[in-house]
Picture (cartoon, rainbow, N blue to C red):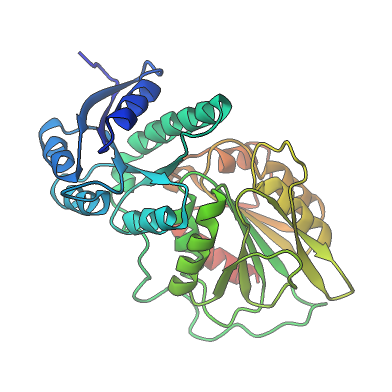
Length: 355
């Protein structure tokens, strides 16, 4: 009897990985592995017969790939799927393709690493399984990375304001678990022609951020690129913080700002850290910055939002109902730091109104 435990199906062509994932999951008393499939075709069969609450899905498998299996499962027996991705650019691209096909989230695997890193992978896997199981109905209604046919943005391109009179001169966005979907939803609904620069910080491995920026650039009206050390801030450009390091905005002159990327603080829990990036934005654009916190575990971003607000800027937080994980926004809301708490599909409109 599994009782109220979360029932997970493991799909992976490696017997070793199936065993490791099962062991990781079942360290939590609230999770049970109800089956294991050796390839995508068997995964589809077991998904139909076992009706699990969550599926973990490898990408490269014989007979039927994880992408093909995800598409088939979402068509025949919609179930929250967490992709298990390799830490490579190819793995990143395949992961975002899987999100396109309806996967709920992903976890990156790198088993040739320290026991501490293995513990972090285990904690992340368990947390994400719990998160997507709780949000099952909402996640299955999302369409993934698809550009909207008609974005609900103003027909008229926003007028360019001067630096002195502009109400909001810079937008900083932070996210973690569920962030890829949420960030795409927000950015794809912003119209081309905005002159305000953006910095987006998301907890994501280094191999993934470049591929994510490229994909967003293809989907969005604004230019999106991975931030580079030393580059100047440009009007209307969205910069994505690289994984594995910290990204800050630095003032170089009265009207000039640039990007600084390094590993300080070296022992930071998150690289990139939303707090680190947002704090720098608050300092460079006092009273003229907007902080936006989207779905994610933990409380990263709370202190950055606090400084933005203390310096006279504005803050937005995603509401609980539309979050994959109501952790980071909750920390901001509970601290009384959110000027507005709104559903995900309203955030782009709120940003447009403020800038």
